[in-house]
Image 1 (tube, rainbow, N blue to C red):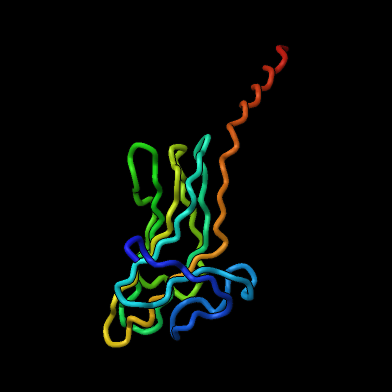
Image 2 (cartoon, rainbow, N blue to C red):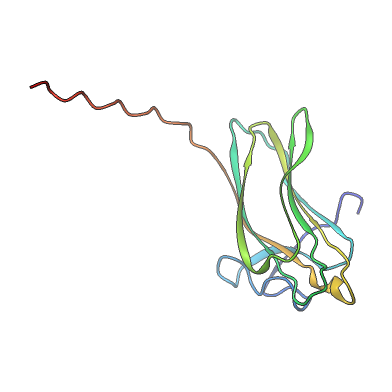
Length: 160
């Protein structure tokens, strides 16, 4: 997989113990995507190309839990591709973030043409490689509303 392995869609817990969520972010019984805890593996979840008219917001929930002390949780990052400048990283987290879904938002410049979630697993100590599942859920995308015209100032008070 020269361009990275695919993320897997699932519900419930991930197959590895002591890592990953026990359910999706929204209801606990829906679906989410995750990376399996394989040592030194690179996962990519890339959007199709798109065009923006203005800056936009990418919002998502992520789960990066590693039970134990193997220090095997890798890095989750969000990269964007912009016309003329290629790929750049706008957001990343490394290491155990606790056994909870956490929210994040990234501002996408208007020149963004593609978004990619990257998960890079690590090899920890002992059997720690099996404790580095990363998961994503409730990914949403919205463009900013154009700024409104500020209200007119109130009239001056009447003179006595």
